[in-house]
Image 1: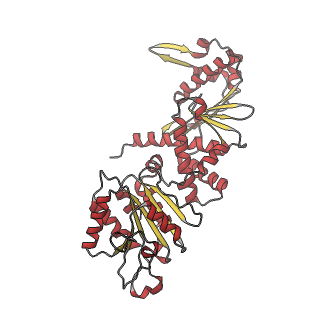
Image 2: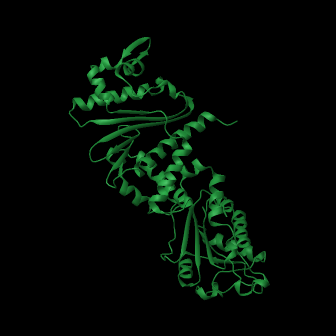
Image 3: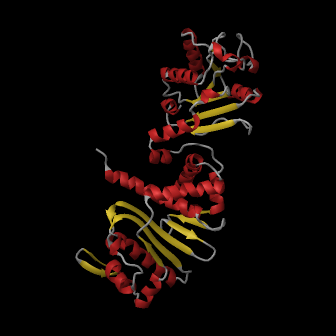
Length: 404
């Protein structure tokens, strides 16, 4: 049975992250900034004012005044504190998405309504009048209301996300897939990282810095993004974008696979190599000069295990080459780059090291495509703009088979 409460809680977290991302994208000036988890969920800073925003997602909840009452009291306390200290005025914004009940709140709020529905409450059978406890009169409360905005008709989870993708497409002139799987993915990770910084100054970022940082990473993964999308949906989208109908063109394709030697199961790796070979080889007699097969590099595998793996492949009469023509020979790019054909039986080209990989990618002049699967940090960069390079972070070896 699905725990709908837990699902709504998780969606609530993502809604707040998405709201922060959207607000920084909507800033009108590249030098304007937002700060996360400072006064409120998001603080928006322009040259002339600061707006503290609390944003909540209550898709399964009917709106009632009690839902936002604690937030209004907190904002009023902050309003009084900074006024007493002589600090600049801050604007306050409460926005939320609710399933129903919006008719209960008529805007704008007046002082009497504020007192009755938001500032008066009972605790342990004792009535509290928050404004009286703060020593604020009607004039003070009117001043507070002049800097308070309340929106209980905030966009839905889906509508807000769709607007983020539109904003990213406009900012980077890219496709919806790139906007989501590249820029939004990076934005989600960046916003999460900001939110956990201990110092308020480190939780602040300008629009310019935000856009620049989103454009510096090329990793198609972070754990929060996958949690939001769901593994099956995430894998399917990557497969549709990068691994459909690859056999149509005889490109030189390099599949870089990282393994954890402490958990590696050889049979899983062999199965993956067979899958890569089967899906991205064309070596029938009728393919003639258009025949090809993929290159594979296994990162992190121990030397002895790599030898054992190749022995298994040889015993099973699975045709592969590795660029070493005889015992004691040096690596030869011309050897490993020779065409795979029906007659020579080559089904896979195994690269033994990063050095062999770099030499091969650098020497080949045909169209090259590198698909790098990594567990943690990226471990290879072709350093050549002519080489298509896709980096996809995975959690385990078996994820790769699901993707390709």
